[in-house]
Amino acid sequence: MKVMVLDGQGGGIGATLIKGLRAFLGPDMEILALGTNSIATSRMMKAGANRGGSGENAIILTSYRVDLIVGPISILMANAMMGEMTPEMATAVSSSPARKILLPITQEKITIVGVSREPLPHLVNQAVAMVGQMVEERNQQRKSECTGPRKIINEGSDCKKQTPRDRT
Image: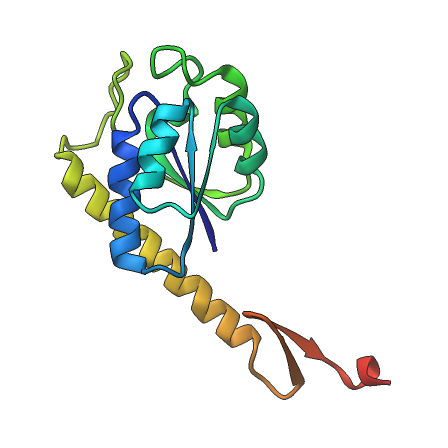
């Protein structure tokens, strides 16, 4: 599973998320750090991301190549983060088929009804637990796809079922 952590400004929220994800999920999880600027990306890379990219094009392209996007809710808002989140970036993230886990933190003039105000460490712990649950569910799904009466051919971490017709 590829996880994209997206942040802007100083990258503090993204770095905190990456540290939590790395501690919870271990070194095998592929975590991509995407920053609206190079400072945010650099800080997230230092927190333990596998790879990183900065700017509009990197965010737009990567949004469609990952399974999960994690970050503050402002990554869905055009012109958020003092204008760093361009309308094109927000559109790419919101339109991406990837699942999104968003922290209800924003400096914009937006109030989200029904969300309790909790400190960042609590929100990060909740987000990390959600990602962990999603990874576990995906692993269980893959495991069930790789079992059954058909012959299985392993291809890396994935499996492919081979029917008798395929073998001839």
